Length: 372
Ligand code: FAD
Image 1 (tube, protein in one colour):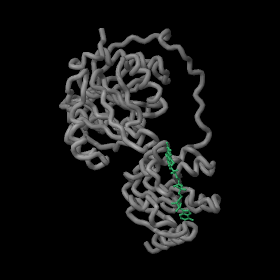
Image 2 (image 1 turned 180 degrees about the horizontal axis):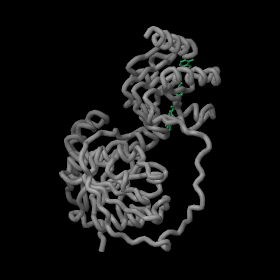
Image 3 (image 1 turned 90 degrees about the vertical axis):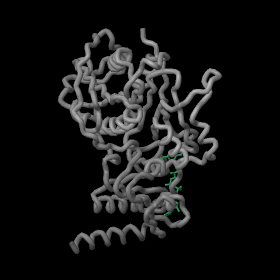
C-alpha cells in the first residue's frame, strides 16, 4: 500500500522527460542537468521517466546531461499525451520505485500533469520554481546573495517546527519561487510527504553536459483504453510560427519607450535583430498594449531567457521583467533615463532616444561587417 508519509522509504531524484512526436523537449535537458546537481548533493541516482510510443531511441540522450537510469514506458496509448494515461503510468511508477524528488517542466503538459499526479500521490507540489537546493550551505549562500533577510534570520531557516519539534531541512528539497506578483521570493519545503514535487519553467535552469551511459529500463505496467476518459480527435498546430526566444543567442526587446511611434520602434528592433541574427522580445507593457504577440514577452509571466546578448530598448527594468532576463550573458540598455532600474543590471548603458540610437547601432554593425 503506497504511503507518501513513509518518507524514509523514498530514494532518488526523478525527472519527467517530456517528448513530443518522438523529440525530447529542451526543458527536459535543463531539468536533467538540475536533477544531476540535486542527486549529487543527496548522494543518490538521477532517473528519467519517459513515456511515449516507441521512444527508446531518444532515451540515451538523457545520459548526456547526467541521467543514471531511464524508465521507459512504450505504448500506442501513450503516443498522444492524455492526462489520464500519463497520470496513471507516473503515479504507478512512483508507487513502485518511490523517488524522493519528482521534477516536471512547467510546459502546458507539465502544468496539467504535475498537479494531477501530486493529488493522486497525496504529496506537495511547488509550481514555477526558479531555484532548487538540497545542500544547506549552498541554500544559505543563495539566501545571503539573493535576499534581504538579516544573517540571524537566514541561519534560523536551517530548521522548522514540525508537529512541535525541530526539523532540520538538510535533506528537504528547498523550492524557491516568486510570490505576491514577484515582490518577494518564497522558499517552500515538503517535509512530511514524498516525493517532493516541483515544476520549473522552460529556460530557467541551465543545460549542463555530464556524460554517462544511462541504463534503459522497461518496467511492466498496466494501461488499458478504459483508463483514458478523453479521446484526442485531432491536434491542430498554431498557424503562426511562434518566436523562439529561449533558444536565441541575441534578443532585441522593446518596451513602452517605443510608444511615440510603435510601428517604427518595432521595425527598428526587427532590423537590429536581423542584423545580429536574433529575435525580437518585449516587455509586458507592449504585449498588454497589443503592439506585439504574447509569445514575445520576457519576464516573470513571460519567458525566462539567457541569450549571449540582450538589448533592452526603452524598457524600464521592473523586477518582473528583470526576473526573465537578468541571467543574460551581456545586457545592453538603451534608455532616455540613466536612472532606470534596467541600468543597474546592464553591462553597457546607452543613454539616449532609442529612435536615434538604434539606427546608429545598425549602421555601426553594418560598417563593422563590411570591414571584415
Ligand atoms: P515602462 O516601465 O513604462 O518603461 C518605459 C521605459 O522607456 C522608461 O524607462 C523610459 O525612460 C524609457 N523610454 C521612454 N521613451 C524612450 C525613448 N524614446 N528612448 C529610450 N528610452 C525611452 N513585465 C514584463 O516585462 N514581463 C513580465 O513577465 C511581467 N510580469 C508581471 C507580473 C505581475 C504580477 C505584475 C504585477 C507585473 C508584471 N510585469 C511584467 C509588468 C512590470 O511590472 C512593468 O509594468 C513592465 O515591465 C513595464 O514595461 P516597460 O519597461 O516597457 O515600460
